[in-house]
Length: 70
Image 1 (cartoon, rainbow, N blue to C red):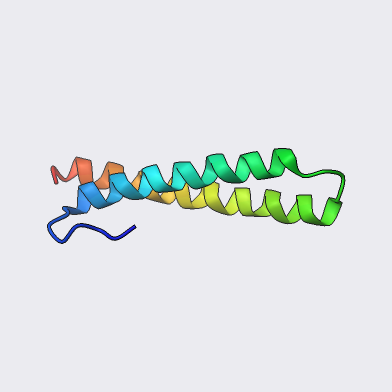
Image 2: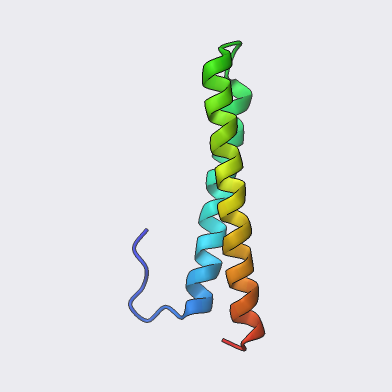
């Protein structure tokens, strides 16, 4: 998604959180759909952990910007 030119840092952080939550949901669906292929499932679960870490960072940035009164 292309960010609006006049987007504030808080608006960008809020958008990033929403986008990451959507990625999390989609990856969780993909993991649930995987069959017994252990290698594929392990890779998909690893991606889920990466998305969760990214989401934590995005939420922390959002909270920080809110605290600054942005």
